[in-house]
Image (tube, rainbow, N blue to C red; front, top):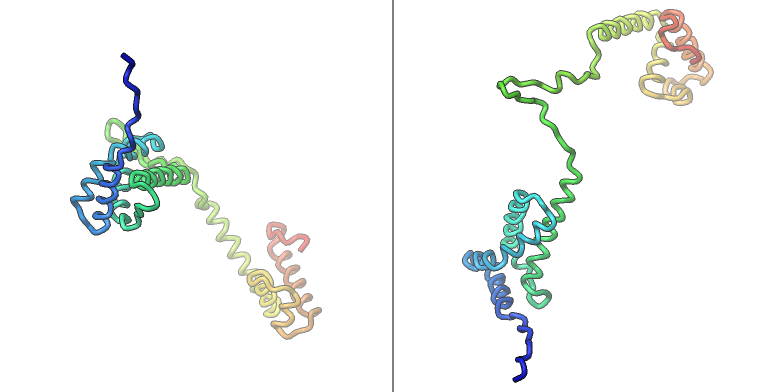
Length: 211
């Protein structure tokens, strides 16, 4: 007696058709149909997500997001274009891949406060050097500002005005001459004499050498 031939079971179109019909009802807001879609696909979609996102807790959160998307966008499914499980799988795969991309671009953060076993808290930021000036630097800066104001007070009005427009508002000599409606040589002279007077008043610390 010859052995019976081995046959391959045909593709189960019944389950696919039922899932497509359920998705059509989900598009109309049918919650019972949505539960049917969930039961029919959850194991498969969770496996897809876990192959991409290895963290099981994150994968579970992603699975919930996937079904939220399915509920919101079921009306976008077209049975004529793809089988229902392929459409659901695409949503799950894209959601998992997007999650990985976002995590790669997020900076790693560390809590500033560390709690020890005895309950005491330690602020990491207390050991980080600050860019803000210390008391001595602030005092020095204040003294320099006072000296500068005192020296500026010794200049003529034209010299102060020219220096302010050149160094604080960024005007060129040509723009300065146009602004003041004065000859270019005149404003250049005011600027030069003002700088010389400031240098003599403030001393070498003024940093005006070679200007």
